[in-house]
Image 1 (cartoon, rainbow, N blue to C red):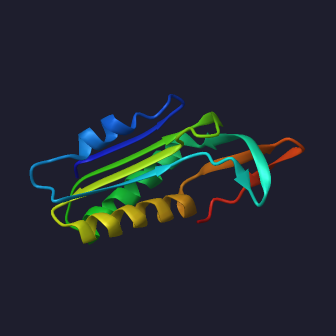
Image 2 (cartoon, rainbow, N blue to C red):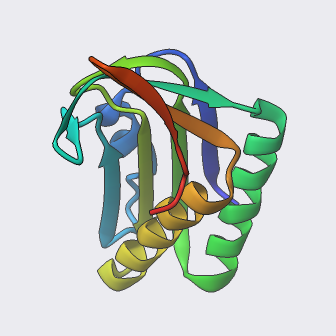
Length: 139
């Protein structure tokens, strides 16, 4: 498997992620970039805080990667997730998939982000002006 999987408290570099998945064999690259939005259910979001149980999260992210390579013809797969305090507009997650054909890239990328949100032990807390709430990690 040609994968790059990381959990870091450092800002994610979108261009380096895209550059890493590019290959001459790839006719399609699909990239999902998750960003911190400024509101949830009409409440202004001040910031988000992400926590992870890193050993288990990395194990689960690798399991997802194996599933992707088994199901689609993927050249490269990148999954980067950030932890710590993130402000509105910052990037907590990047998924990038390169494949020979676009349909496989789209499908695999969607599968990764949806499965990550359901199964990987990374938790998100939304901070508002009047309080905070831990958010269930479901799409």
